[in-house]
Length: 404
Image (cartoon, rainbow, N blue to C red; front, side, top):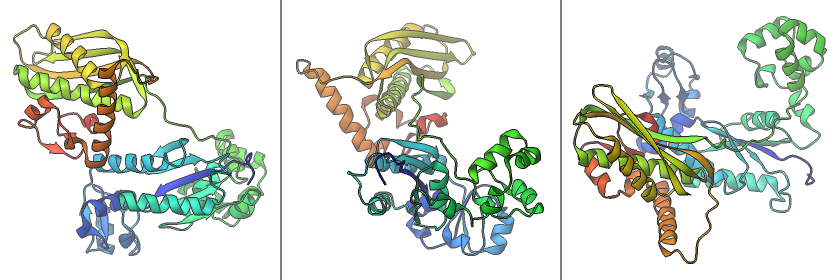
C-alpha cells in the first residue's frame, strides 16, 4: 500500500457480553453462557457451537443447550470493558471511531512507515487487547469501512482478514448478500425470490432495477455496496456541548454533610469526564429539587476554564449554599458544565499549585482506570459510603449515567 491508499481497520469484540461475563467470573470460562432477559443478547462460543444464536428466545436456547448458564447482564460492566478496549486501540492510532459498544473503526492511512507490516501490527493489536482485558477481538482491514467490517467477521473468533487494494470485488463477489451491511433477512428473502443469492448476483443488477424494487435510497445503497463503494470516513468522538451528572435522593434529606458529599461526588464525576474527553468548561451549573417539587438552578462562570474537580467543587458548593435556603428535604441534585472547549492548558512553571493539581488529577485518573473508581475516594466521598453501596464504576446511586 502506498501512503495515499486508505488503511481502514475494523475491530469487533468476539461474543462481547458473554466474554465479559467469563472474564468477570472465571468459573464461566469454557462453559456455554447466555446473556440477556427473555431473549439472548449474547451467547458465548461454547453456546454458539451448540446452535444458540443471538435474538433466540431463552426457551429455545435452553432447549438446545440445557446446561447453559444464564446471566442477566449489567451494562456498566460492558461499557467499562469497551472503554478499556478503546484506550488500547488509541495507542495504535488516535483516529478511532466507536461504531457501537463492541466494535470500532481505526484509520491507519499514512502509517506505512510506522506500520510497514500491517498483518503483524494487527496481530499485535489483537494480542494486546487479549493480554490486557482477557477479551478476544476479530480484525479486518481494507480500503473502506464496509469491506473492513465484512473482513473482520468472515472467520471468528480471533479472526484476521486483510483485503488488499484492488481485490475488493474479488473478495465480495462470492459472499452471500446477507454479508452486506444493510441487507437484512427481509431484503435477503426478497432478493432470493428474484434469484439473487450472492454479491456477484446483486452487482449484475442495473441500478434502475434495484431502485424500482426497493426505492431510491435502499436501491442505490444496495448497488453501491455490491461494488464495495463506501466513502464514509472514520470519524472521531463527538465532543458534547455539556456534561452533567445528577442523582435522585430516595426519601429526600436535609443532612448537609450528605448533600455536600453528593455535590462533591458529582463534581468529581464531571471533572473526570471532562478530562477523559480532553475538554475544560467555562460555566458550571447546579440544580436542586425539593421534596415538594420546587426547583432552583443557578450558573456561575469558571475563570479560568477548568476540568479540575477541586475548582468545580468550590464553584458547586458556593452555588449550593446560595440555593439551598428552605428547610425542606432535597430529593434531587445535579451538577452540570457547559461552554466546553479543548483543554489547551500548558503547565505554568510559575504556578506550583496548578501543576500539583494537574499531576494529581492525572495520577488519580490512571489509578481509577486501572483499579476502578473506588480505588480513590476524597474525604466527603467516605461519608457517602455509609449511605450507598459501591460498585467498580463508583457508588450505586439512583441515576445510571453516574456509571458512564
